[in-house]
Length: 453
Image (cartoon, rainbow, N blue to C red):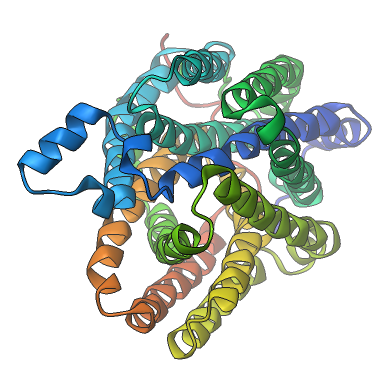
């Protein structure tokens, strides 16, 4: 599709934005968000890999499992992922209602204030030694990660148009990666000095800075909407809380993005579960497991920032989204083929680092730029369905598939992973094909009927 010629008004907006603090506020926002998450991620992962079920599940649940002849410790990750899946299904319509009934200036702060309040509750629970906190914390962090990050990128699609996204998303992603590198470093440095519970206070402080960034970026989102004559995010969007599901079902590009997400989660889940088995064997204490996971996160994010700074922006500007979506899919396919032939622990770690780094540095920025060319319902409602409900459906499906396959050995797990990676590559190809029909910039909504609050 030929590139549309920007109006003089939108051209002036982009020129002003290039010299504005908006990019720096976005960088700070993503830095604090991912730093706050990665301070807590090693704690979550250590709980998921714990060989002691009493550290994860409450005693009453363990006792109920014993009475039923069901050892919960044999299904720790499967139960945690199932709990996360259920929590996501419950919360998705709640988020849909927030987006539909309240303007952006209300629902964005509410989401982050809710997470800060929950972390305060967990800080108390950890200090009080409340039984079962491990499972609830694992589920909360998994929910927090998806909702907080998808809200961030939805908001960025309000602040930046497609052309500007190609220029700045690589840098914004790099800012987040620096935060993701800093988080595990903070955890490694402080976990044995201050304990796990007090790490939550660090994350709460970082999320509070995110709220400040939202306030500072709001005028730029308003200016972008005016420049492109779009419906204002300062009004409630309206519509059904289930509109996101309807959009995904009806739109070929959104369906392709959902397919890519489902199989992309599949390869990650299979790797994650094999890795957890290794950690249980070689890192039996919570502190040792936390240090191992923080080291792995550091390696992932180190590779990510190199790619973001050197390749992402150049590839997006020169070739569009196609190489950023297809190259990671093909690399993961090759990695699983190697693992199916030689499932060595070191190779598992290498493929894990490659998989996650390529997702963060290439595939995710490519997907996020697509939403700058869609309307606000797609950005906030459909995107949320794909990034949360579809994501956790993949988690739920593949964590139980792994449990079944694990009895046949690692080679069978990774051979199945080859087929899953092929599904991911097919989804990436479909996205590349379908996105060609999008306008170069997001469609204007000025002629549409304003949504009623």
